Amino acid sequence: MKGRRRGADLDEALLDAAWSELTERGYAGMTMEAVAARAGTSRPVLARRWDGKAPLAIAAIRQQMAKAPLHVEDRGEVRAELLDYLEHASRRALAIAAAFSLFTSEYFHDTSSTPTDLRAALTSGGPDTLGGILDRAVSRGDIDAEKLTPPVRTLLTDLFRYHAIMTFSPPPPDLRMAWVDRIFLPLVRARPTP
Image 1 (cartoon, one colour):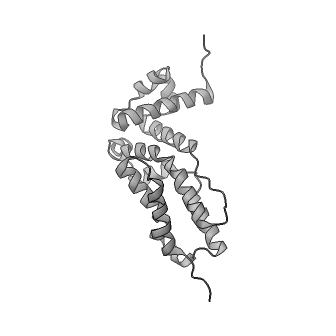
Image 2 (tube, rainbow, N blue to C red):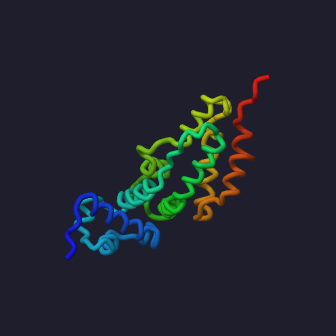
């Protein structure tokens, strides 16, 4: 007979079960009872860790995001790094779609929170990968820092998020390449010195 799961093993099983419920039923259809049953445990065990389905849903999405880290190595060239970033982000597209289900449900009523609060909960403590790429590119002289105004600095992330939310799928490689080559880089490239 299999021993009882404890600690990190139990937490992982619970979060995996919550993720399955969230992706199959959405936030509105997810229940603490269904998550506990799927994980092969009881609701009180689940409730000792998360005091409701809102924090459980956030934890499950964060766990999935952690499985597809956005770390991008310094490749010495901003275009390659931006394409790597978008490739890594594409692996997270399902988590983004699941997060969007929170926007279209009673999540905000349950938590008395705002979309800004949800974004903060999902990204809290995570690295600013795109910011690091852009800062390296500025240091190398690839990008003009003055052109990285707030709407431009987040443009790739905004385009990605919009696509993932509207299609519930990652953008295809040719679209990601067009974003980088035809939209973003022409806006921010440093002019060569004469």
